[in-house]
Amino acid sequence: MIRHALFAAAASCLIATPALAEIPPDVRAMIDAAIATGDAKQVETVIALAKQTQPDSAIEIEEIAAAWRADQAEAKRIAAEQKREQIRQAGLLDLWSGEGQMGAFMSTGNSDDTGLSVALKVKREGIDWTHALRANADYQRSNGTTSRERYSVAYEPRYDIGENLFAYGLAQYEHDRFQGFENRYAISGGVGYTVLQSDAATLAIKAGPAYRVTERTDGMTLDRIAALFGADFDWRIAERVTFTQDANAVTETGGEALLIVDSANTTFNLLSGVDFKVSDRLRSRLSYQLEYNSNVGPGRESTDTLSRFTLVYGF
Image (cartoon, rainbow, N blue to C red; front, top):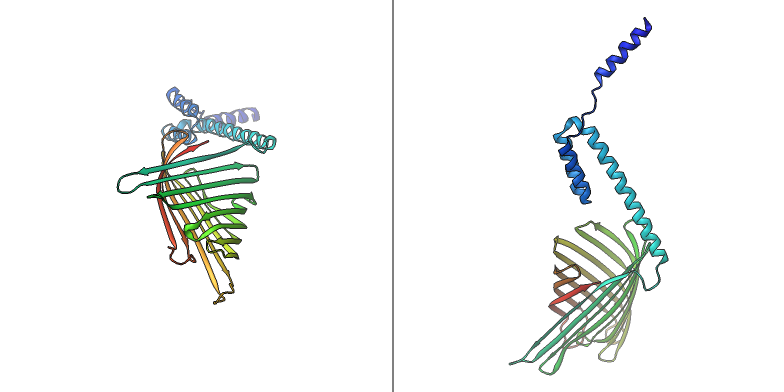
């Protein structure tokens, strides 16, 4: 009697639990084709559509998706470990990447003008450290007279403290006699934070104390304690169009024993650009640069602007 009761209970359980429906061949082929592309967004979209259109096969479809996600996670883990090992084994001159840009113009007739603009930016990303080196040169002559001559070099190391927090250092040299100084040296250190980081946009800000020495064209040398604020924003507007925005502000304060014992100088540098992708390595760039110095020599403008079109080569 007991045996018959157990048999009846088991039979009722089998009847209450329906068998899993097999995934239709065309739906399975669609899922396999999406996985073969390697595009995670496309795979997730196809999986969602397949479960929506085939609710009876939702469990089996989700099992395929779970297995695919596990494979992706393992592949990322292995790739990350391989990259870390590559960084550990790399030499000092390895793993550098960057870009170089150049622009030039020449005009004749009522006025004879020539100009040249070159820039180099290289970066080395390690496990915790990132090293960046930037160099710029702008030169222009109008009717046989030099009308612009500016050079700058900067080295900036960064150390990742946490997921978005980092510490930075900065050593910078500038020459621009049209802004009233032959040489200007600055060192700074502080902290920064990555506010936004995605495939389409990144935003990082930084701030810290600075020390700056300025050798002016009138022969006077000034050394000051300063404060530095910076922001770096990149936005990929479309597949081939990227907007870049770099801003740095340095404010000096201190005393100067001349006739008035109090002076201050604020420097603000703003560089905006739009990159148009020509090929995997070549881009064209339209940029606008504004440089402001509040304390310049007599007869000089405190604000300089420069619009230019250059070709950029990435490596």
